[in-house]
Length: 514
Image (cartoon, rainbow, N blue to C red; front, side):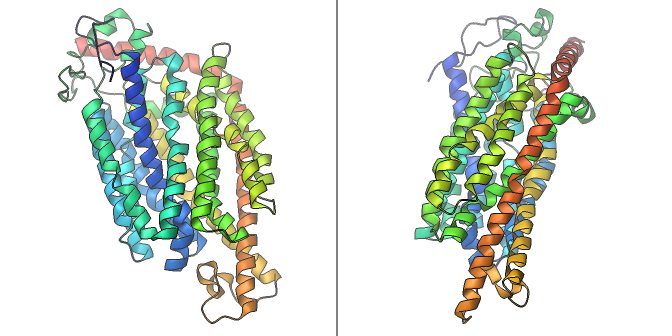
């Protein structure tokens, strides 16, 4: 591994200087953590059909397991953990969080009822709340603003990687062993990732990358050396002392910076609405192919996993690098790249989910993910660039509180509810008596049902899933409109936010000296 530090480049003789090799190692270790984060978060979408049949659940109940059960404490605990990360060792927080969510993922394999599984999913959310706020803050301290969208898009690459590995591994294990074993086998290896992060990642001084880029003045650089900021970067690897001298800005101040301008508000609205559609349709993409085409879990998991890894992964990386390049000419591209991508992706997604050949649908699905996932890096980059150095973890937590409470909390159950309603309508249109949910528990006919009832259950479930998916895919275009609206004022909004951030950082430096 490359050396973590060498002679100081700025900010005094004690300030560390991290090599490019070391910074990239840090980044990819965090990508690995985010990959396991999304494996454990999204595996339920791949094995959901097996859980639905085994536990006799409705699609709305399945949506709660992938949505609000996870999101409730994930969102509410994110803010206090982020506040802790503004002062304490972020590497320790991340390591502990990984152990917690990995353990609860494994415990999901012991659940024998909807309520038990619901509670264990809540535990997964508790652990996962401790990753992204401190991780975004760490990345922003290692990578200067002009490279930040690219670095954060690489970190976000963990989303498609986690979705891919979770789908492939989860589908194969559920098909050949059981859905319970899938939870256990993907959960426990996360503990090894936690150990690696604790051993190899050092805590950098707050604002280190901004000083390297000359965005913080020399006076502040002197005050933000490791000695002045809790001695956060120990060459011996010892954990830094908490910095109690410098109080981070209030949550209200962070929220005002995040939502207080037209451009920033619509950037947040765009990522929230896009994620609402993404979490919802993503939860039911594997069940769609199982119900519509009669495919098995392993086949669907492999296909969905490869599509997510290739298409969504390419889009995630493209969004960050393209935006960093284009924004040198005009910062509107932080909003225009996601806007164009989401609006173009919408009709292609709908085309894929209305084909009568699953092979053709899978081929088409390789295209829209490249366009759709361009929104992650630019949005996270704008948020980090607009914040003071001691606002960054809190800003991510506030963003994720709004985003995940709405998108992750209600996207999957809303999509599931939509599917249930369309399935009910299809059941009624076929002239069948009774309520679809009670007549077809778990979406299939009960044992002993006649052939006509079994066929009607299968057909109504398939039609309802297709119609529900198409209705929710339209939401991507709505998200694209928010990004277009953000582009109107974003250059001025970023400039004002950056000026306020510089003033805030200077005030924090003066307080530290006093």
